Length: 415
Image 1 (spheres, rainbow, N blue to C red):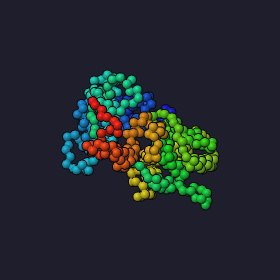
Image 2: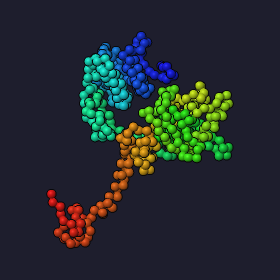
Image 3: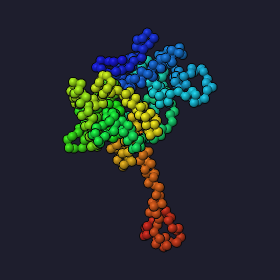
Image 4: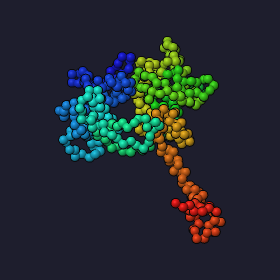
């Protein structure tokens, strides 16, 4: 549904086709706090499923037991009632991914924490989630100022398999995607295909932006044609279709002259289309807009981007991974920077991560793998540990290469 100001939000309707009051209160709380529309959507979907499950089981929502929550997770995974024992194979009963199940579970637990904090209701699930959680080894700077407050944990913790390295695209795959969008003809001096799509994917590949950040760009954010290194400003703003800059922090991303020329060619093309429609292109227009479908020149939907990706996958076939998404460009960009030796703290700022630990958790394997490859020359390192022949000959009782660490003229340390 649409809200005042033109934004989009989500709610949950009951059998009477009216918003479910407890859920709507919880979702409105997050709207007022300025939570991401995607967060509100995820909570609404999780609570819609929870409400439907409670109705199936004939259970009330006010004080469900932890066992009810366990049954809910089983139902999400298999689609079967808790009392039904499946005899099908795991592959036949495989439901949504564990990450999806975890998101639905998080929505329910957060809802009951809200009920306890705001209304003081003795909700069993909320009380069960207030136990202490041991922190990991990493401590952010000034962590000692947080005191010894307990961190809330879910009363039902799911085991998630260890995730491997983020998926990436090879340079040839990136080039194949760009060429499939639009190709420059040096004879005619014109672009053939969708220059807008090529600019979008080239921007994702070269800057590491999230898709939502790219769709939120306006023409005023591109600083080009000034004789200096071109850059793009990431400015927190709302998007008509629910996109936003994650974290709400502005940052600058310097780009290449090639991307600057591609953007300039796109602006010329867009200005001609806008002028032919009797309108004037302005700095506060979104960069990526509808060029053919109505409403023309309105902000592009993320669904349209994913539809375009699907067409590219079918067109390119084996030339690209069948499961690639726009977010793969971000992983590819970060991996390429780290392989080139760019420090992790620089990559962190370019990607817009809140702290460096996020960058390390996601892409630490890149530098770790490079370090392990370097250690492949271990024999050359070991050569530096050997004691000189002259000193070994003077002490025939000690074998050559003994790791005593002594030098000629030194004496053993005691204690």
